[in-house]
Length: 208
Image (cartoon, rainbow, N blue to C red; front, side, top):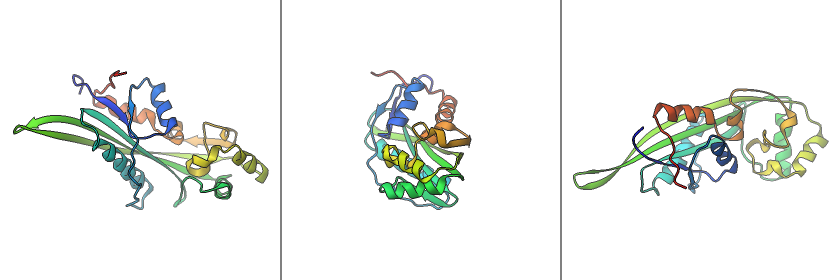
């Protein structure tokens, strides 16, 4: 792929994922996936990879030019219990209260779709090469009092976050340790993505 130019497309409206890509000097477009997330597996790693594939394929169906589409899905698990975004403040309190003083796992599934348009038998053909993988990070939290949890929830920061916290935000003082990729907890395993793209000799082009 070294001699071929591709657009790089992020299939997500997440500002955190966009920020991480910009920090790595990616030039990219944002086309958020609108497909509903359907869980079809039981293992956390398989769930996040499959949903990332669903998102990437949804966006790929709308892309006409040669491109690389990045789909990603991040989920928090405490044991076998999946913790999504809190429904309300009471739900956020329950989530954080369950996580404090414990070790939980953050899984991110990533799908990269390499789209190449060719002509075969005088017909335009869209060829898609798929690559999916996941990263897992263990996160350990310090103990928190009820007042500390309530004060954090009052900031409104946890309301759109899986597991009801943002490791890169106001919740940072309560993170005791992590084992694995920090950016994976933020929402995008950036280093692994860069390494996989490097194997493909891929460099996002500047089309701004």
